[in-house]
Image 1 (spheres, one colour):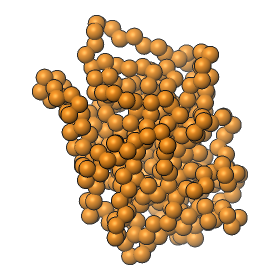
Image 2 (cartoon, rainbow, N blue to C red):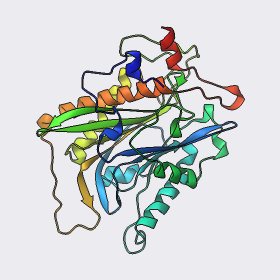
Image 3 (spheres, one colour):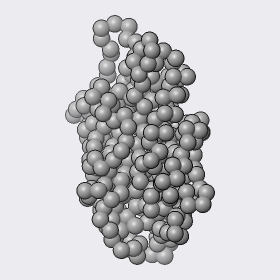
Image 4 (tube, rainbow, N blue to C red):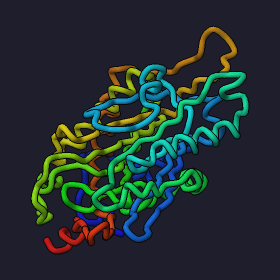
Length: 340
């Protein structure tokens, strides 16, 4: 499957990481479980931010809600406390509760004191509605599927119609999972910012490619009722406030492609950094923090914008055909690009 750059589509001016993926951030891994049977086209995508026990050794994290028409779990506590203590699962709207249960069971298995000798765990699961291309009422996602996605997590990231992206649509075309990254020099070393998107948004006919072309999916425009989940990962030393500001810039990458975040759209950005860890059991009254100077943050702003835009393009370009209930399908942007 060809990615956006193989079609001559480049987002912005910054250099990507070696894999042009969220897994260019050291320690980040991604896995999928894909369910395709009958009228069911759905699945689970797992983002494992770091190896080891995240509950005991949390990551600094932040949330930016661009438009909140969504049913995700765990974001309120991330916004309040600024920490991430489980992997992130992406799935369809009706699979969120199942994925939360799977994350809780996995966390308790790793730390039996959860909910008894210490606090409960804040499981994070995000969603988009794949209903048009999948029978969402089938409630097909199981805890075993969620755990399988976690166990499958690795450095190579499959894109397009896989995992949570199996039944998603974007700008009237087939959407799904996409990823990209940017490299930034900070304090004499290379850092990375990577994006992974679950792209299920955008009115048909509104897509604007980086070269100015406006592909026509030949589908009648409908009100904007889709969603996009953007996961941003970085190893740059930023605090929660800075990370939320970085997350906000992902919205610029979404807008560059023609989206306007309609009333019925759930557009959410969740970001984390691997550079500032927060121990569950601190050894003293203070916790060390290394913080980037605000005067150097523009490169991360641009990286969030560009990597989000390119991740969406990669989702569109790599997506393959899916047939949903009633024989419904979505055209593939790759077919349009090859013909134009």
